[in-house]
Image (cartoon, rainbow, N blue to C red; front, side, top):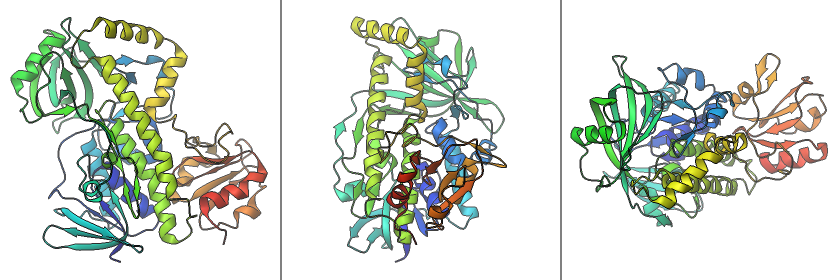
Length: 478
């Protein structure tokens, strides 16, 4: 074997996975077909759950220190959810994808892991022992596992001939990185009486410290083929149609047309090959849910691949990747499609649709509705199916508990599981998994729980269920 895991794609998903494998002590190679890192901002928002996961690896504070990354208020279909402000320790933040990619790539390089660029994958075969990947120019890499994080037009997915069912794009909207003048708030949605609309979100600042914005816009007659260039005149016209004279374009830095295609791989696992991120699911980028979902795919898969490489993974463990992550992306596709419909991106001004949105907007004034939507959009409401999930906490992200001198998130930076044992009842059983599970005791303010390396609670409450849970997630004891 040339390496244990080959990661195809150096976007947020692939780089996050490489870091998870690094934490797990698993050799990995990251390849990308691009000769250099992209400078395009692409996605622009980071959910609460993704920030928690970065915190659990000690990455959040240095990531936030890379620039001005303002916090925002959640929205659903352009309807703000103000009652959710302050609900989570880490609010939604504007951190462009390009910043995350640069940060993660530099972090990996500091640990001796360098992206192999200009590596265009052209073929792969797999057998019972591993995967052989071939590249343009004749290069070959042999690995035990391969993870496809190579985007919506995934070469790996095509080579696998993997099913990718769903809906093709039926409409395009413009997404652009711009500098604007005038009445632009931190997050603004505007719609003209004729159905033309625009949405503006913060993207931090340019090298001169000037505010950058992500602009999305559409409306009647604005759905053009993807290969039609976006011009400054088109941007100015769209701003005028939505905002009137309140907002003007100062600089157009980058623009593209995106579609509302919605597809998801039927299976995330194909033998020793796994699909993650946009290679596994694509949809209209509303709320940066694609990037966040891909990062969380990597967090779910990384420790499981580590367990398999180290030889202690229970037989079913790698199969839980599809079982846990496929429903999450399916739910994202559904909420994005609902938001796209309510936002009337084609500007039809259909009376039935307007009536539906008015009713929905009225419902979102209720606290419980805002909280439900916030759970959906923040990633904090994700609950994985697992044994014992009839208990309130099991299957949910673990809370960041104050355990005396440290927080529980800090204790997850080892990449191992964590058993919180406030009454020192479980030292003997935990000692059977010393290389896979850390134990912290003598903290009576906490409740007993077992946390997986990816930060999800996998046992809580019943003492009789602890040893079976340890075996289920961490294999046979030593």
